[in-house]
Amino acid sequence: MEGDSPGALLALARALGKAPGDASLRLRYAHALGAAGRQSDADAALEPLAASLPRHRLLLERALLRLSSDRNEEARGLLQEAARVDGGNAAVHYYLGVALYRLEQWGRAEEELRLSDRLDPTDFRSLALLCALQRDAGRGDDASISRAMLERRFAARHAEFDAACPP
Image (cartoon, rainbow, N blue to C red; front, side, top):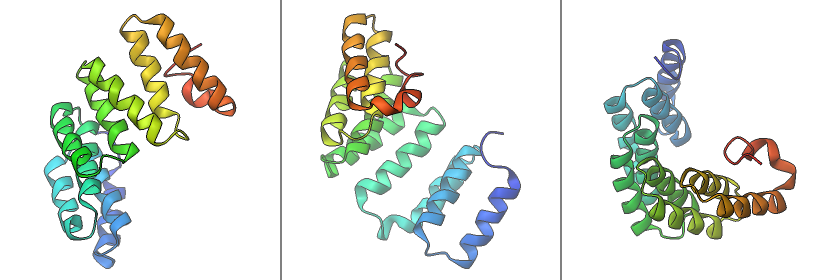
């Protein structure tokens, strides 16, 4: 079993029983359930948040559960809906890029990653994944440009993006 141990799940469940309205605790519990392979339980744990979380955020959280279990097509659908609800959310576009990358829809993934990078230029993840995508697609020159952009914009964070986009 991947993810949290049964003891950690039990501790989260107990804490949630004491504070059922704690949204961050509920999100942690749902993601721990998902990591343990209990997808239907994870979805059910998110359900009480439907009234309190913005719609795009709930869709994003559901999509993250699917991405963590390689249900990329389902994640793509949820993320596309989240992007329709809030087209200005960088995280939604980043994770949509992730899903499309995994589905080898590289042209669309590149569009989403570039949009995510424009929406939040302080987060290196979109540019690092774009670099990896370009390398995987055999576009070494483009990957070199993306790498140079990473080095220029995030000089102090090499260790964080070197694995995705090696020099």
